Amino acid sequence: MDRRTILRLGAGSLAATTLSGCKTFDFLSNPDDPARGILLSANRLTDAAQRLFQGRDALAPTYSEADIRQPMRPNGSTDPQAPDYLTLKKGGFADYRLTLGGEVAMPLKLSLADLRAMPQQSQITRHDCVEGWSCIAKWQGVRLSHLLDRAGTRPAARYVVFRCFDALSTGLDGPQFYYESIDLRTARHPQTILALAMNDAPLPVANGAPLRLRVERQLGYKMAKYVKSITLVSTLSGIRGGKGGYWEDRGYEWYAGV
Picture (cartoon, rainbow, N blue to C red):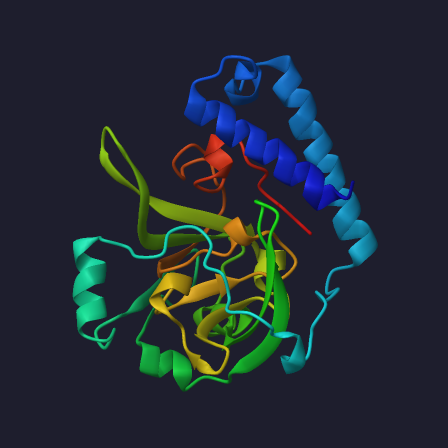
């Protein structure tokens, strides 16, 4: 089995046992269990090896338009119901503003028109979901590195955190909105873009409108949809459970490379 299959089976098993209340693999959700620590150490070694052999700027495979043979299957949530999102959607996202702040020299607040006025990049790539399915689609948007250069990253910046409009669950403190993170190295990868369009049409709501992240060398859950804000931080410890993302705080791998 390849690495993606192993990760999919492991993450799927964890999700299934968590939802069913099964106690068989409770050690996976216990951060203090030695067995979980061993598995996480193996993940870190795998991530380091992958980065070493792939190289800093190794590209994900790209395809031709003839390879786009089916509609892009949506991953994750498909129709956010947050009041602020519904208001923006009703207005065609004319009032949408992406904020970029944190460890930057100049915080940004950008409309969709601002983003569309920037240099655009198109790429036809394969989306690999942790559930095991894949789809090929054409994505168009602005390189995340362009925004980082415009904002100016401070020396303390190490991670880029994305907060989103879609709530995947509800906790004691209210809706649990999606959040995800990548490191600066990944954020500056030449194929890491904030997508505004898919298959030569405006990004559909089901696929993350008005703006979604594309990180082509990683699994689908890393590619945050319905992006509301971007924050550069020095550590992930203060982001919810401290693991770097909604699913990571529930036992999934953080790097999730393919």
